[in-house]
Image (cartoon, rainbow, N blue to C red; front, side):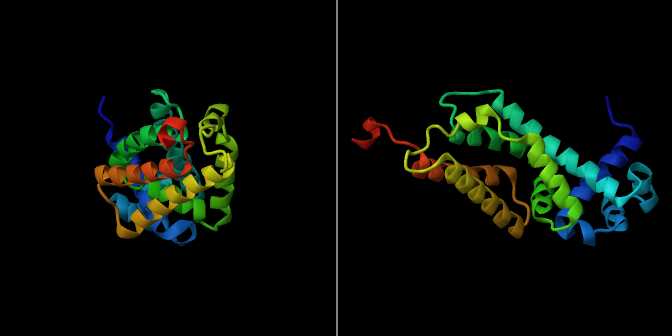
Length: 203
């Protein structure tokens, strides 16, 4: 079923909000900025979300849920070995599908994670508490080299992933296929550095 004109306008507002908040942060973004990018009047933005705070809370939750849904879709197709590197390779495909539909969803999420505004920090902390670390995700780190703690391995993977995203965003939005290819090269490198090698591999 096709979206109604009202639904299409609201979707444009959400996409525009991700883009503008990602570029300027919470404090420096105005409802007029978002309305301009969405191609609607400011009154339309207020009609849907009533205030900038409500809008930010709404698009933050939509972004985090969309990313979690993409990851869950990838994780549903578990293949062996079920380690963190296999999970990263599965997830990048699902995330790039989301990126193709909503180019600024990751830009917004990254910007929100580092936005110093109290509202952004509150929402990020709530999200971290809500998602947590599952038993399944913890088990993925059991294949890490014995001289590297799972926590340090997780931090390294996070830093590389975030650094990669920051570099790509500073260049401007790239094609999803190019992003996926380059990121998978980093996953290969991380696996080479962090994964426990079998005796057969050492020979």
